[in-house]
Structure formats: structure tokens, C-alpha cells
Length: 370
Image: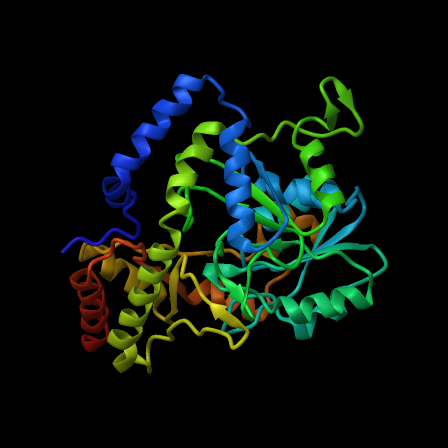
């Protein structure tokens, strides 16, 4: 049985009858950039989070850049984040001439370790960017407490965690937060797209200006911004998908429970995902296990027709473009260990029980033969 790591075609088939009319609606309107569809999506996302303001933009990466700019990050500043995440979390800071400063992760959650955070803060620190990896919120409450003692803004990178909850509150409800609508996300568009959420009206006004070249009104520019506008076509697609997100999340949670049960007999070899006590809703954008024989297992699964992904094989402090930061192997051992052992198994709402069983059987076969 072939099991892809992600099957976007299956999702599209289930909602095609809803998607195609809205595409035609946007085509008939001839309003393709921002406009009513984007405004409607912003309101719906804000309501789903429980926050006053949501601001659409062109990508999750742009959302990070915009958030950092709104927080006043400039060349020479430092931005603290995780070394075990997608490149954009640190790359956005580097784009603004700031220096990424890394803090090691918690071994169970893969998220930034609050116990190590304060030691990384210094006089040049301008912002803290915790990442909600794989659909699980970082320990935001503890991070916000530390940030408050140092009068620092926190930007929650929730690219993989729309709908997740930290102590009963949705990702994005407590602080300036960025989201991605890249197609592989749990709410993915038909291309790039991003969103910011904030409870602060002044911050929201600045972000709305920054995404359109700093305009406060047509051809009046209060600040130097950028061109990062969400397309109406993307917004229309996302509005349809948003109506299904809670059901899709419930399916992901069922799949995670099925994986947990099927892989439990292999506990000596396979470390299953751990849901942290503060995470009251894990949305399982990925189902990521830890295995010492990661590359051999991945090859075995691939030969059996089962897709997998490695998120992320090189921690950020060891990326070639950050060589000038002076990072070395051993600097962040927990992140480095995760990069060498994490493997993400097939995970999407339309995954069938027999597919999960096939994945578990193939993993069992691998360890039985060793």
C-alpha cells in the first residue's frame, strides 16, 4: 500500500464543489489583491483565534519580517529564537540586519526551552520569537513572563499551529503572532500566503501600513514598508477551508492517537510525540517520531511506498549562511540530536486507518529484522 506523506489532492477532491464557485466569484469581481475577500478572511481568522486584529500578507516569511519591523528591529539588534525550526524564523531577522541568537529546545516538545531563555538575553536583544513546532504551542506563558521582566516583545511563530491552544487559549490570542498558509500547513492555500494576529490596535495599524509600502492613505507613506499583500484568490480558498479546519484537526488528532497505539509496542525503538501539559490542543501539523536509525528506517519505508519527511536535518546555527555567527557542533545538543533523529510520518486529515496500519506494520517489520 502506497502512503504519501501528504495528499493535497484528496483534500481538494472533498471540497472541490465548494472551492470552484468561489474562484469564479473572485474572477468575476476582478478584485485580486486585498479587498473584500481578504477583509472577510481577516475577520474570520481573528474570530477563530479570539483576538481583535488579523492582517493578511503575502507569506509566512513576510509575516515574520513585518512583525519584526513593527517591533522596531533594526540592523545590529539581536532576535532570540529556536535553532530547530524552518529557516524563516531566523532568516527574517537576518533580512533586517539583525543577529539571530539561538536557545536550545526542550527534548520532548521540540520547542524553545524557557529554562534556557533568560541566559540568552542581552542589551542588544530586541525581540523573542518562540516557534510552535509541529502543531504544538511553545510554553508561551513562561516565555511572556521572562520577556516582561526585560521589557521585550514576543512574536509567536505559529506557522504550523493555527487552532492549537496554550492553556485553553488559541495560538495568536496573547501576543503578536505570525501564521503561514503554505499548502502543506494545516490550513493551506493554493500558493503562498500569511497572516498576523495582534490584540494591539496600534500595532495592527502599523502592520497594515507596512504591508502596502507604509501607506496611511493612497500615495501617502508614513513609513518605509514593503509589498506584501494577500491575494483575494488565496483568501477565498482559505475561507472555504477554514470552515473545515476544526473537523480536519479532529481527524489529525484521531490519526495521532492511532499511531500512538500502533507504535506503543515499539517504545524501545520509537519515541512517539509528547503533548506538553501546557498544550491543551495539539493540531498535529506533523506526526514526528524520534528514532536512532532514522535514515535506514526512512529508506525502508520509502522502499515500501511510504512517504516521510525530515523536519529539519540541519539546525539553524550550523547552516552555511550563518557561519559568521560562530555556531559549532555541540552548541545546542538537544536541537542537534533532534535534527539527527526526527522523522515525520504521513499525516493529513484524509489518511485512512488502513494506511496508518500499513505505516506501523512497515516500521514493525524494520525493527523485527534487526
